[in-house]
Length: 134
Picture 1 (tube, rainbow, N blue to C red):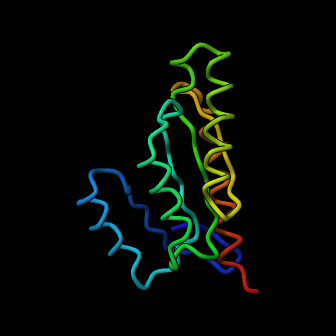
Picture 2: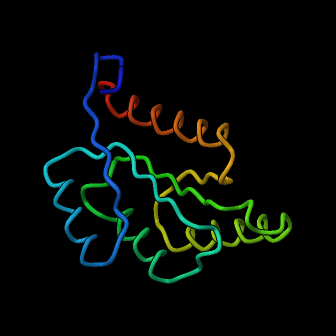
């Protein structure tokens, strides 16, 4: 549960990774459920059309409307610093061009607990805000 302004709110986390067949199964998890936040975690070096297509599909899904979306680019510390910055800027720009919705983009290294905490705080804030009365 997550403490919110209206008391504890149950949350469900699901990992949408895996093959296309597996991704079809997790869509059932969101049927009839309000989705408050989507965290799309992506290896910063992944330039595949498949990954970008999945992100756009999630962003445009009827059940995701009204939810906050977070693009989280990871494994930056595995790349030379100048390459990591340029690659992240390129990925973020490509995803923004492909997606008709606004989203937050965060960049994480494999060893950065403070960056991970910042992302988690942003997600909790988004979930709490979506639970507030209009």
